[in-house]
Length: 348
Image (cartoon, rainbow, N blue to C red; front, side):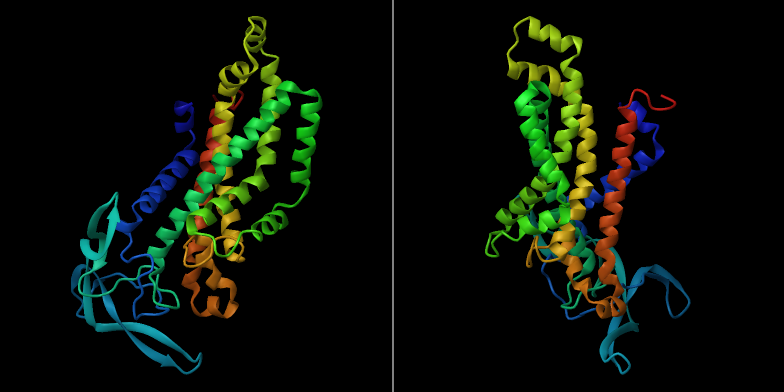
């Protein structure tokens, strides 16, 4: 399958992009110039430009200028402009906010401005670095997406295999339940279920609660697809041989039928994860998912609910670009995997 996947150029591009994103998110403390909740005195600053040529016309190593504030009479807001009298060189592996990884304490960050501040994506209304929070928030969103995918695939695979193998009354009952979940629009169902999550839940329990809500919304489609694959596998020669040799039902399901579903389940997982990222971001954006002080891409976008804020500070929409890039890369991977596992795909 890997050799066929490598021939899919878009899929390989998606894999490279997603790998880079995952490295950034897993080691967010190292790549983020600031801590997750660290605030600065620079509120609502735009993304800083990186320069290599100074006011004197000479070339320098990459640097940023300092920031100075002034009151905008037209908007009634404080605005930030570059202070060209202050120049801060950008350095790799620079000391900053202490953090812990695997219990060990570190203070090195991948990049920062020596002697000053560096806001690659600007700051929010309370002076928090947007780039750093995109990394921290993305990690939470990805964790929820993976947990949701595991629960969804477990529920959908179990229900689909039972429905497709036993047929009869079990098939009818399970399929009616699946149809019930499929006919209800996902957004209203997700909002209704998420409304039952208590506001005082601990962050970990809330994450699991959101993942469970999203799994309940999306397991039906997996169950229906697995049922179809199980119906086909049930009539295959190796399953019939196992039945004739007296193999138990659990052995037939989990040793013979389930392995034949692996490639399809991998494809379903790569397509479920981006759907979950979008769903979690939507719930958190509307206030029904994760809640501050927890950080996810959805909670970061809550500031963008006001059109005036978007017009004045468009960089707060950057988490939306991170969502789009991640979802697209996963969809590219899913499409490539689907083509790689399809024996009738063109040119293979």
